[in-house]
Image 1 (cartoon, rainbow, N blue to C red):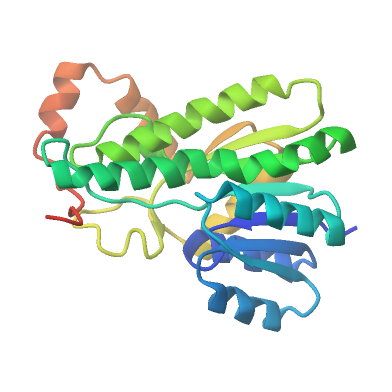
Image 2 (image 1 turned 30 degrees about the vertical axis):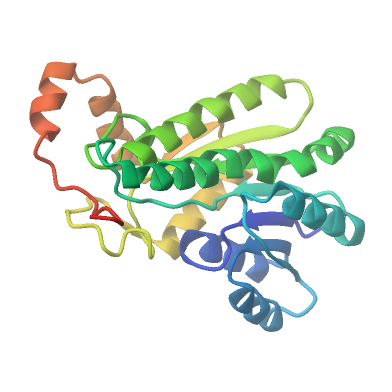
Length: 254
């Protein structure tokens, strides 16, 4: 039986690649994103397979309405992927960056919570399903100029672990995926080298395999997992010296 899959941030980059991967395998997909025109085109390409909802993951009522509609028409989802995210260069010393901090935390952390919450009761009742959170290796250590993004991904990793333990015994699984660099609009203007970068389609394929295996925690590609592990345990005095002059993502207000 084809999977019923929910994906946020499904209009571009990794989210779109994931949606296409599932749709090409015959899945029914609930696609969430702010760009309704792209979602409409996706639905036209895969008639009868796409339920699309133009919404912002910061809007809990819109997500609840979408979840209610999808469950009513397609049933309880087998997989819910909280993928929507933003990356903005930020510096604490600038008051004008506070709004950017708020935006990043609201979308990357609370947006994940708001994406999962409307489906959880139905998945518990069905005693099946997988919740997938797209975090990042950026959550392993704080990078200069990316404090909001790193903090949001660190929070996402901890949140997903808490959720996994909370759901122990329910048969609802939680999968944490920490990508390295992926060729998407989010990384298009990064002013630094991006080792082991993957195109979005290849990253999506690897992620789907991890979801199918119900791997509780994985880094994609694995090489970035090794780098992340080393950095995570690097003594602070060494880490600080290595990264103090690292290239930084441009600030929106910079």
